[in-house]
Image (cartoon, rainbow, N blue to C red; front, side, top):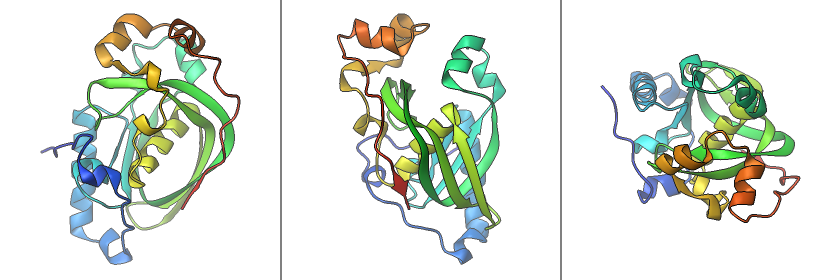
Length: 208
């Protein structure tokens, strides 16, 4: 069974999700929600899913970047994005802190903005403090693509979509992204779109 992924325009995607209580974290209802979110993410497929994306305003995300999702990418492309497989895990009530604000700008999409992508700058390195599905504290540091996934999903918990951070001129359908921009680096894309060189730093963020 999979859940419906709500699309841009649904109010839940623009509201700050609330934290789960200790009682909620240990409940059978939350365990079922996590399992359904995992299955929904894999069915999509996607590399992350936040509870608001399935219409539930809770600070809960699931993440998994499977090796099979990276099969079509070249080693050079994976190296540029600093992308490697990430095992399935759950983050509850996460707090994100930017550790390396160096901007990494690549095309990014979203299961709740179906069919589109755009250039989005994200910090290269972040740290996240959260609880796992057992309610145990976890701290993780991430760089590159994994850091991008974490920032994208925590944004969802604050009512933010990637379109709020994108280079608006770069917005494209997924089909046109594959036709025109696959295999090109960010500098080439920006030049083709008549965009100036991207900024060299991003402001620090602390998302509690």
